[in-house]
Image (cartoon, rainbow, N blue to C red; front, side, top):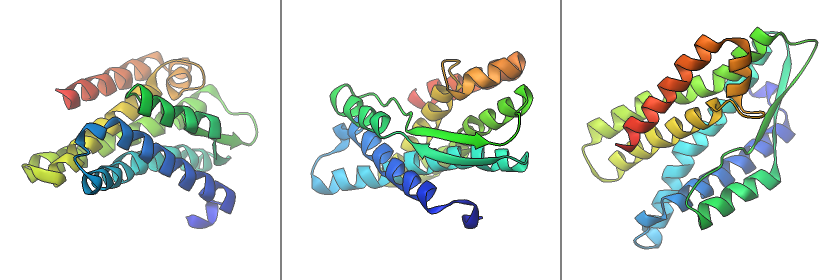
Length: 196
């Protein structure tokens, strides 16, 4: 599987993973009691937002490959900077670190919709183990890991399902309005539940 991730894509993924982790650590800075707490928050962000982001992009990539296309993630350095600045200044993460570009012959609307849907669905599936960690842990840093993982993946799913511009939601909506509505409402519901 790693042979399908060329060096440039690996570099882009690592840089974006670190930047997204910093951005999410910044929005949870109210938990920074001291330097050790700040480091733990970064580690939690690295494990939750980072894994959610990487698996989201890899879902796009390997779904596209499954259809016979080639796909590679390309980071957008300006958007990574915007994400970190917004997190630091406003306490909000606009997570659009780049895009998985698909190469090949004509892509049907259905295939493009399914490839786009695979990312947010991955984040929704990741909500399950993080919710279980939160419930089972009962408190402390493990419970925080579960709660942050649940919230971050719910945010990633909901944000990416917005039917705007190049976000996944616009391609899913273009393909199938019923599927879009179901996944959009599910991601909104999980996000609301995670906040409550």
